[in-house]
Image 1 (cartoon, rainbow, N blue to C red):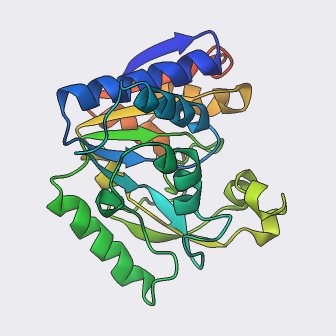
Image 2: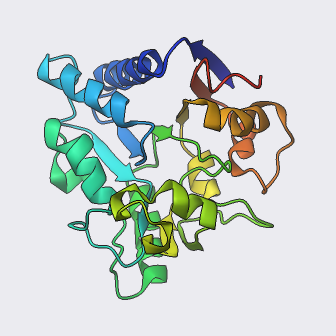
Length: 242
């Protein structure tokens, strides 16, 4: 795992955006995996600026969003598809036909998960997967537990994760859906390259466990130690426990 520590979250975010833009330049038909959450917002803003400046071109790329809440359609304020649209997709030239997301209101969530897994496979798999890090060590919505699912799956969210995602729900954790759909750990580990960004002192403990602790299902991000090509971008606060 290749770790880079930046002084600030802004520097880490700009570096992540440049990493994506440079990869697109080399591989125009890049297959991207994109997370929601507060951490990548600044990087997404920078990607929009790079696109406007003619320094990033998404016209031949494909994107897969990592997860979605069960019971929310793409128009809901808490939907991750809406989040990505507002913070990234509306400001770049990525084709809607090449932008894939899980359907939170699918009649059968399990069939929807299998459809998504097959669509990722049909695309050739993820070339560049961007990841954030939950305070409890989750990546995507792969929550800590006794076991981890390999494939895209339906998951019951922990209270800590619901609290982290309460912003669009009036800050009330109980309003956050109990369940989500998420790509699995096997899907994550099959990505060609993974770039993880973690910022802020609240992530320091999870970062230390991810990099220095044992590989354990109780800290899903620790499984990134098993991947052949992972880049980790941290600000000084997130690296405080290293």
